[in-house]
Length: 305
Image (cartoon, rainbow, N blue to C red):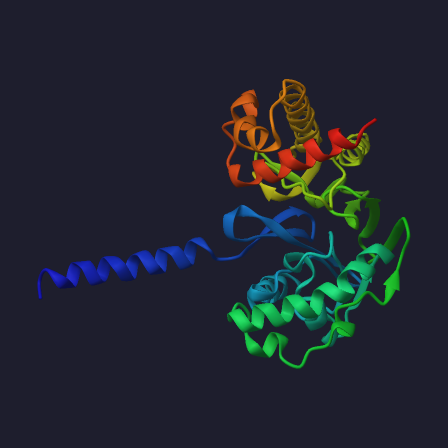
């Protein structure tokens, strides 16, 4: 028994420490402006507590209760009035219906609505089947609750009294429906999956890397004080650095894929070998994204006349 007890204690401690490591927390970015940092340091929820209510940007359904608790710990019982999403993926849009049940207004661009309508029911059904979400989160829920009831084409300004929140539809980049949130007074930019800081970014056949870079450069021209990425390393007061760095990463990836393609390398050879050609970026984590992103660059280069 003496030999077993320490092992059991060690296993329990490991489980507990793992749970603690995954705990969600609010990171204060400015007066009553927060990001929720979750597993793997990702900021896929932001919220602003205004005099006239709360704005929430993005939410992943499996941790809805925890995210709501974090918001309530700061906002109290102040109403969640508006909810927006960076794009239609479920780790951004998964909680829309639950916020709507509380009275929140879902806002979004028409392209987001077009993509979400067929995607959301399939994703909910798949996650329920796999046991990846609580049944009460999803059973009997209808896609209509997750859909935006206020649509905007280019820009939507929300006046929360103490804070002004701007949603900008920036167009096709990571996907075709990308939206960013800009706080003009605080000069804070929430980019969602437009920015992967010090990580290999994901591009695929839904992406347009040329336009993505145009967007990154335009956003950098806004001179943000802080850019909050959807994935990767975050530091308050980072300025436009994450935008500029990802732009350089894409420049490097495109140049290396082009050189390998012109040297007669096949697509599979490019996908397997391009990491070694990326120089300073080769050491970045999330290398699993490299083959798919390289394939999209290869596809775009092949389509050029």
